Image (tube, rainbow, N blue to C red; front, side, top):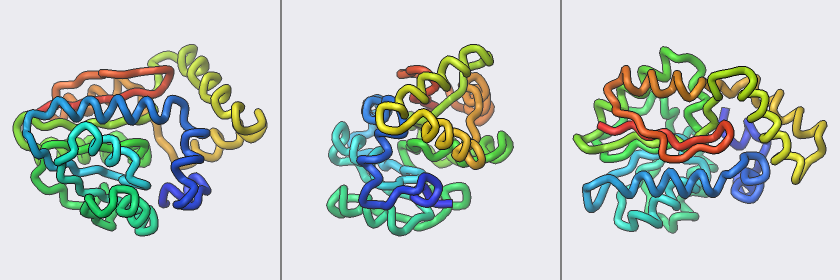
Length: 220
């Protein structure tokens, strides 16, 4: 399912609405883009998986204005939004990012996309393909929700998420959002994500984390 269908957001309303749904959204994307700035190549090629509205791609452009960005998304309407947002300075591929052939690149980026990969086996395969596509010195960077390792901390983080939602919605609506998303979104613990990345060959860093949200970087 596309991000717009999954969240019930029209493409033109996505950027305004998503920040009411995801805690620390803009800060998280900014931290992910800052991580990308560590890539040595002067004009890096960035493959942005699950591009959506192009928010992540735009942030990367701010820190690396000459980056060549290729956005991959199954939702053509969202890719059209991304193209307008970046004023055409993005090449797009309308395809499922789990199936797309990842060309040689310096960065594989994703924001709130990889939690749609439902199993550890499939995520391991995606990380392996990403690693093989990256040039030496490249990186994978993912901004997403990663669960804490204990049930107590997971409950704490869930309450923090509900508190964020209640700034814009009722408590009942906030609970409904989380229950509905849980039918399709699959969140692994941060510890498990690190294991999967290391198994694919990456060296892993966590440059930013708040509650259950983090920027995870895999270095080649």
